[in-house]
Figure 1 (spheres, rainbow, N blue to C red):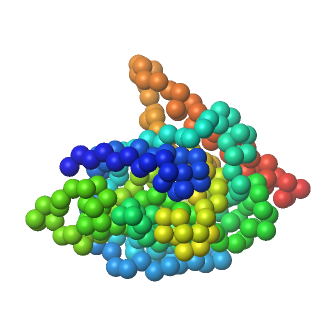
Figure 2: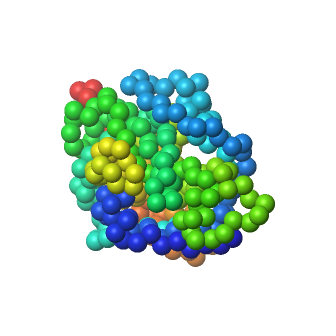
Figure 3: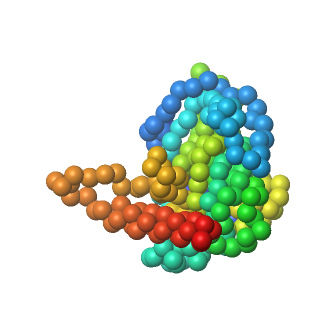
Length: 259
């Protein structure tokens, strides 16, 4: 069923640190069938996760049907045109490892608390180094019943209302994965949080995942093209610009540590 959901600015401003309004078009265009999960347990470790620990967390969190929803982000105010401006908009910019994943539902929308152990502070409070902080991301585990209530539609008779699904508006990280991210504080209680937390300042635009070659990259909005393709490459070019900026910043920080 095609559904269009517009999360109004007031909600999105609270959720995403005051910078983003979300327009989500649920296309259910990429569905992976898996088993239903059991209750997710909180897992936070001050040390590097072993492969078995990471696998256990991921198996528990992602052990059900995953629905990727199409969406685009619209930003309140001017979106930064350079990497330095992007970084300066964040209170904290860090590199770290995902050591825990836990979903919760607020207002019939799913959110995931990502526990990130900080390995490098690129901007902001250096006392955060080697600590684990909670980062709130929209998307995660939710029942069919709650999802239906959020979008004001009736479930079919053959649908189990208590079935758990994962809604993925933007890429959800996995335990053991490394991330570089620009963060803004989220007040206690926003979207059902129990304490102070953080959110990516510009959502996927300020979130970089470590790739197979060790470099950090954003999720590309524009797929690779051929010479015959006439599509607008502005999104891809901007991704390259920001990716290069983040990797340069990380390399400079590592160089300073070793010299």
